[in-house]
Length: 104
Image (cartoon, rainbow, N blue to C red; front, side, top):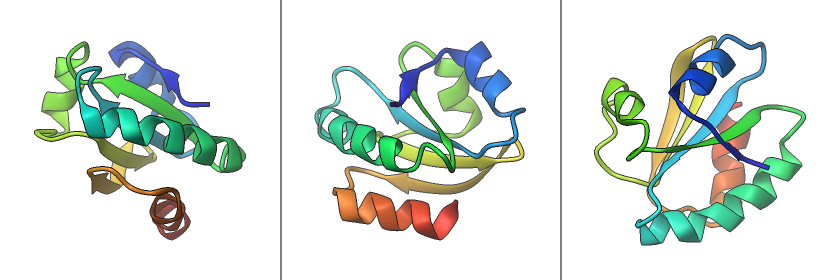
């Protein structure tokens, strides 16, 4: 399950030992709504390998700005506090799984 977090919670998670997979989204974004159930399925499969979170770019403008996010959905993987991989736009389940397999 990908929990929605705020900026402070996100920054705290980056200090953890597990990689963080973050879905930057907005409630009004159609492709974001399409990605949400796919991400939930995959998050359950990969929960032992990473922490999955969602960040609303309209509520966390500071994070969107920090990472230069201009388009969504934007899925990013963070390791050791640094962004190590990113993907822009909707991904079907198989593509998202491949992205995680390649980058986790």
